[in-house]
Image (cartoon, rainbow, N blue to C red; front, top):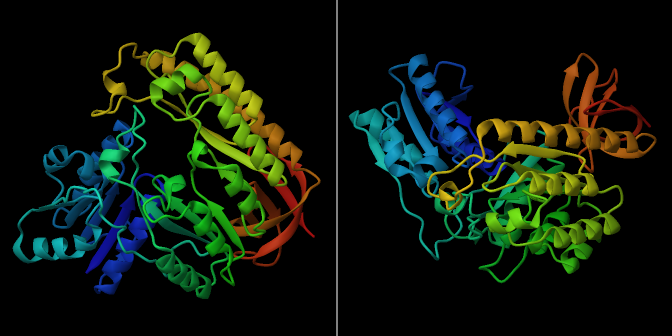
Length: 429
């Protein structure tokens, strides 16, 4: 039997798809690309925006058209948050949520054996534990993503994730240590700790994110430890200093901003002010040499005036983010923001997105130019063209260089000699 997977959404979803792939392979399936003929197609969905839901429906239809006789399974955040809507999708033969992934192989077996439609969505419960999962091998050979936290209880006014992912729960340090040792034995040199709300790691266990970071840094064979997206207000000065004492911690931090206007942040139910955010950025830059702070910025949130948008633009320029994911607010069914008055027109949101992107791209160019002349450590990940390799420095600057040798998977010192619009060019030292 051949099984194919397709993932929508974040790094946590990608990690979970790798877990599912491992489960099915252990069950005797041959794992193939989603573009190939398969007996089973599994779609791990995202429901952060309505666009994600649209992509889910499109992929389900594509899989059925590729092989009408195949079993098509839908899992992940969309059916967990909107079970009734998921059940109405005729292309989905098997439907599970984000809380019972381990039962998906058995659900597929039931469909194959009986031909009946299988719907198995378990609601999240307060007090539920972290789902036991551990990866030994990833399709990407240079960097391993390690999910250490699930769930969110921050309830931003625009976000459906607390409904889709449930309460905060964390991977115990003993389980994390075992997984990290397995990855080190598999020759992964960089690990990325990820979670739905990573900053809340350990809240129910009496530990904190810094404890997981220090554990990861203690594992022989792992050369780099990187963090996924962070909620800024949960990053304390003490934790920043403890991280800075670990040479393996990469000086790149993705601090989710959303808006550079305090009034907009209040309506979003974010839990910090721009002044507090800036203070955290200053601390990171003080403690980490050549530190890169990346972020997300939303434009067109309900009631966002031109003045508020200008404040957000000015703050983004002031912080000088090396990279920004800019996106327009999209009303999400089931959230408070979707029912707020003062919804911004699609045209206005697109126009503001274009202005914010133009600003942040110019700032990115300046950052890349600032890297010229520096010697950095680069983990090479792929060959772009014959003898042309791409890798990432500690602060996640993309670096291209030419070499007659195969550099894939190696960490090497590189001098940055020039900056392009979206990457730097280097030479081996």
